[in-house]
Image (cartoon, rainbow, N blue to C red; front, side):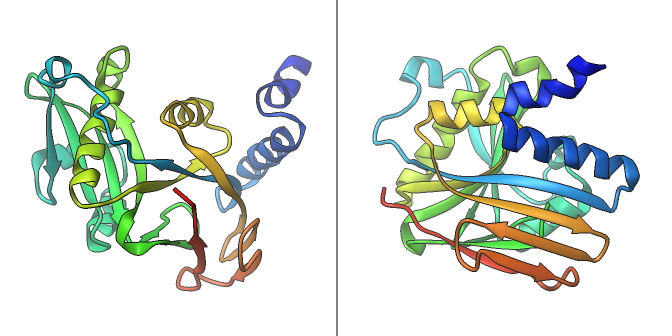
Length: 228
């Protein structure tokens, strides 16, 4: 029992471990209570491909459109996927022998977060993107699928002149943090959201620093800046 209690502190450190423990307690009390701790990172779009031509040939990289059958395979709720297309997000998939191995979502100019009442504004608009919900299907997680997805995403972004991609990472998802660090991501901000039914309180390290939302239509706008 004691080992289970201290495990979050071992994994995340004292501060983040405390926030994780509080979130788990809140969720047990009610599904309308949450404490989410986000890290905002940015990574460069590299000039060189991530995969050699020989390895890249193992995967077909293409855009997945609204209404394509692959959309049904994605684990997100239907209303969330529909909302992503409404905000003009694009989905890029990596296929291995005709099977969808994984995918990544990209937004431009701004991104409407679907786990908190927050809109991320990208700076500079013309050369920035926001990547989110990178997912690898379990049977492909031991291979090159993750690299193939980023290889394809970088090719797409480089072709349209994008130089940097922002991401919102959950502080407690260590695998995602390590993967982005491997790709050259660096942290530029933190944001913490406390949700209690209709009320949502945000603390962030960027303007406006503190925000109180009284309902779903009241969203805080966070402008992201990075010198890459």
